[in-house]
Image (cartoon, rainbow, N blue to C red):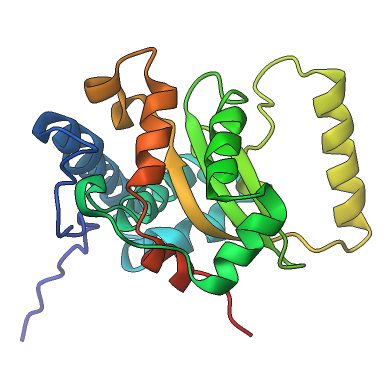
Length: 239
């Protein structure tokens, strides 16, 4: 008896809507279908014949976040997970009537003053990312809400792969001090994980088609209006 070995491939998840009011047909095609296809195809190529071909992108990204020899795999996996996480939370802003759960809204108000305050802070934090990257609203191990502005394909789940500091070139004294403080905290056993609740892609393909080079602020505000708070509220860790 002979057996045929079949390669396992990473595929693009299906979404229930093309998000009119946030994206045009072409904008959605570029930001989701084309880009997610590129990411999953690349991930399939990089993981073929390895244990990673049977793992979800989330697990691949976490496994290889600290392995400098696996950065190509990490980047593809982290991007595939982040982009899916981002699109999962979106609905058409034309008929979005969702609200945060009472618990989540109370925490947003305590940290940012209001939902509008959170929207404004997301726009402000986006200015930290000059090139490509991500914004994540996260809760840390103390249940405190915060915003992470991550460069490139950073993962929000722990420091080793979050790319919050761009270390590819000269860094400012402030960034150096922040890096030193993080390293000291980790060496002393500090907790190092966050739970993402909401994501905003700052990659070019996510907004250039519909919002142009100078439209990133408008795009972020429209993403906020298109946020499905039922999904975001379900991501809150419940004791």
